[in-house]
Image 1 (spheres, rainbow, N blue to C red):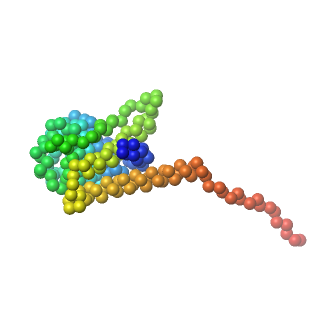
Image 2 (image 1 turned 60 degrees about the vertical axis):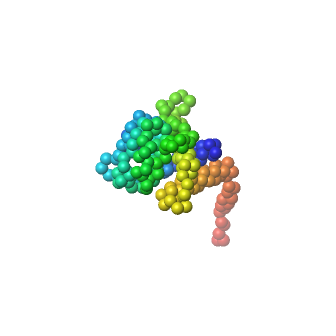
Image 3 (image 1 turned 45 degrees about the vertical axis):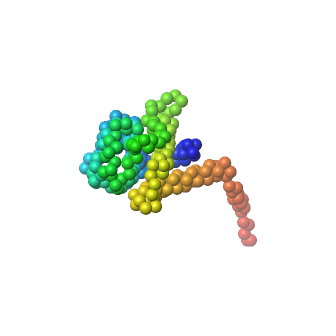
Length: 213
């Protein structure tokens, strides 16, 4: 499973647009995920002024989050939000999860711990891996996290057929995975064309036409 996730991530990373947002987070407009992993955050920083649309998922793994903003505030600032992942936040207030009905909080609460690795930061270039190389590795890991999160959600939640939010979450992840498969097919076709170029019929040689005088 991990090899499949990594393959899909590697073929997809170059298609996305990722920019810095909030407090050293990364907003991925292709996967539609806000990545805020591996920090010392004790809270989720909210966008100033305007709302931040188009992001159903916020990943806050490996931080020190204790409580999230209330659900009304989160939806006011992130209108499309469906999932917040606070796994590996050891001091998270599990009792607060009951206050969220429209947003699914993925956590380690109630001994419901799943396997999730750290999303590595973007490292400085080295002689063996330049800027482009480091970026490709980093963004591949971001996409791999998104795919892994879907597997985790399926483990932690049931009732996808009767829970409206879970159905919306399922539709979102299905869309992301289909998009990755489509990109993968396009890349495979492009590679195949480069390896096996189509035979082109040569242009006929033009000869001068003799006109009867």
